[in-house]
Length: 242
Image (cartoon, rainbow, N blue to C red):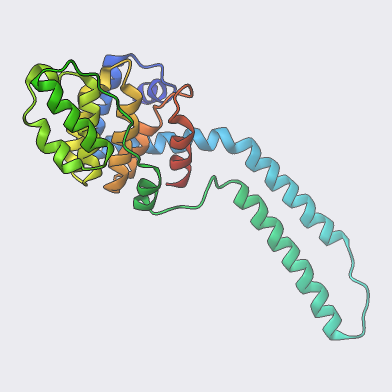
């Protein structure tokens, strides 16, 4: 299983195997926990040289303080102040190195969701028929954030029109925006295998999981966003803050 985890972690797993493993993660929380432990181990290995260097530097600082002999001062108050200063300096040194090992402060997931969730900007082209008139109304309501009206109008669209992936993204965003995360996630699922919209699926579904405080599932998706995506930097900030 570790070899499978390693390929998934390094994004070298074939698409069908990747989809199968993600489905297993959603069904088996214990397996997801095993993968999370694997990720923590990999990150520990990656950061170990920095940690060792920091500890060595800290040890040198400590040895330096041991080598310094405080002068003999008759005034006890001055001695106390000197030792307090040394203790404070050591404490600040420890804090500096420990804080450098932490990527970011842990932030409440709902605050992160509210900070980063902005519905996708989508433009629809219409041809002037009845469906086009309805699409224009949907487009206007979406731009003006009348998401419930968008959802209601989607029920009037023909099935062939609903196959447009831009509309799928729009409806999924509208559902997530009103807090209907389960339906929003289901709606966005067809985008998972789309070359054009896969990053949107990973980003918005990951944010939706974040709003539900399903941090493991959120990180699982956000970690898959490639560096070439506009969402990559924001996804990494969220991962660091969880």
